[in-house]
Structure formats: C-alpha cells, structure tokens
Length: 51
Image (cartoon, rainbow, N blue to C red; front, top):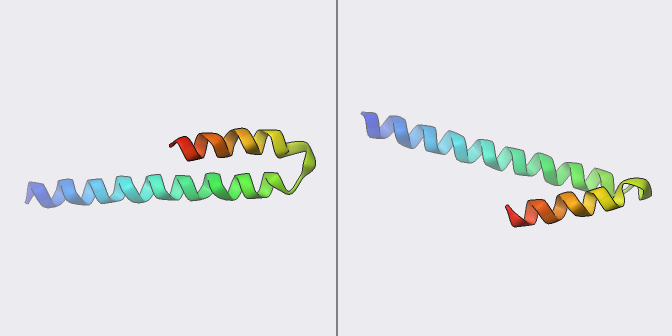
C-alpha cells in the first residue's frame, strides 16, 4: 500500500517537473519572437537544456 503511495507521489513529481519544463519552453519561444528579449531567451534556453 505504501509503495503505491510512493509510486503515485513520484509520478506526480515527474508530471510537475514536465509541466514546468513545458512552461519554460513556451516562455522561451514567446520571448524569442521579440528582439528586445532575445538575449534573455537564450539564457533561459541554455538553463533549460542543462536541466
């Protein structure tokens, strides 16, 4: 029973991390389209790739 709970928690944590990553990727894509924000987008994307 406890194992099921741990597996469930691990799955939720994984999904949360994935959602956070998707959000960051979307942010980078959005920022890349504006010239003013390109340097920041590059920094973020470098950080995302390292994660």
